[in-house]
Amino acid sequence: MPTKNPRVNIVVETPLYNIMHDLAASEGVSMSTIARDLIREAIELREDAALAAFADSRIKTFDRKKALSHEDVWE
Image (cartoon, rainbow, N blue to C red; front, side, top):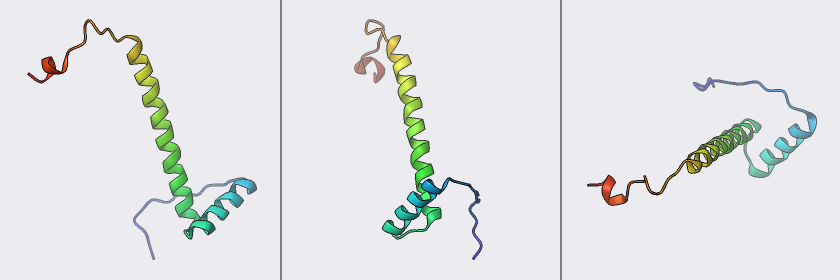
């Protein structure tokens, strides 16, 4: 059955393959599904790290005296 989703071929080391195989078997899903979910989680973790770094840089320049209050913003 053809799929509309793009495909990616990857090569992994044997220990990683074995872990992925065990995860897929224990969850009753395909290795492709496990790989997709793990990649999705990794991307989310990287996004979280990037946003945290951005927030850290913003907090260093925050000046409460110049900040707008809730009322000022929503008038």
